Length: 430
Image (cartoon, rainbow, N blue to C red; front, side):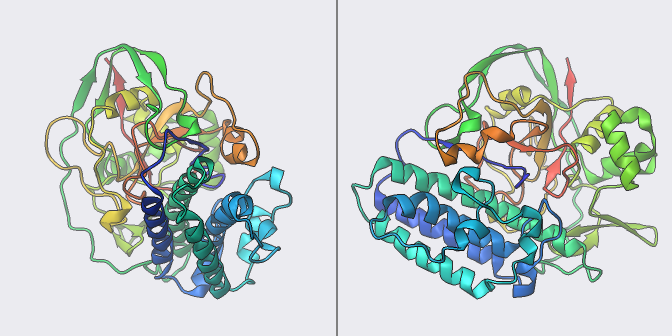
């Protein structure tokens, strides 16, 4: 990102989600969820930054508040005053048009302001926002910015979880973010191949409800006939790749991927551990036995691509994925389920796990759709300038808030990123 290398972009809204009272309720709900996710953490947990690509929980809580203070209150509150002038710099992420920013790799150095003051910041901004949202005649541009801000905050809720997981994984005590029972052993449904006919298909946001700007414009693409794996690749299947020398065979890897594997002495996914001959996996519930029937997660694009080649398949394009997902219900294992880890694919015909469980790598480079235009002003920096050197992922994960995902949603990361819940769905030519 990278800020998730930016899992988002500007809004394309058609109308609004109901009256102001409903928006005020949704604002309160989403904002409360961020605080709830941070609750299991100590002040020390919330301050530390485990790597430059991750951010401290305290920073996530402050930055999402900064968004509403800067883009909404500063513009629409006639009595606007900043909570603290210094916060404009401290919690600006990458909006160059808004002035100076605190260096991203040094966010973990911000022991001051303390966590308690960040919660004060949130409470004051929330109260001022609620006063604005009580106005039934609120200007449509205000309401559109609030909806964008809520979707932005939901992105940071997912980042909060993935960043905390990376942080805790570095602790020799392997502490749990939240205690939970070990995942029950569950066999995965057999992998089948689902056929899709070629032809012209439309992809992109349909123009109703909320959508980020990188999902538009909707446009036609020509697809050849293809097949998709009926479910995500499992730990057990990926373990065969590991134990049969997949990480030691340069023929399976892209050149840059092989350099990455070699330079970092990689031999398994980031959260896998081998303890006295037994494989374990670090989860948000701590270090648990590796369950072979659960989807493999936290693999990079390089790893997903190499595994697909080893398995005699390939990764789908994002157009193939969206063509297939358009006919699927948007239901699955999301963060609201409380599991915060992938589940085994359920039995049944057709495609499973298209939404939730794990973000699915595609072979599509993250680029603008035909006709894409960057929005005017600082808000235009949200997305367009990140459309280079990254690949698209689809479908959401077990850390994604329910209701936040849709078939046209485009996530994106650089090829070596693997601290997010990223997994693998295989594809083949027909």
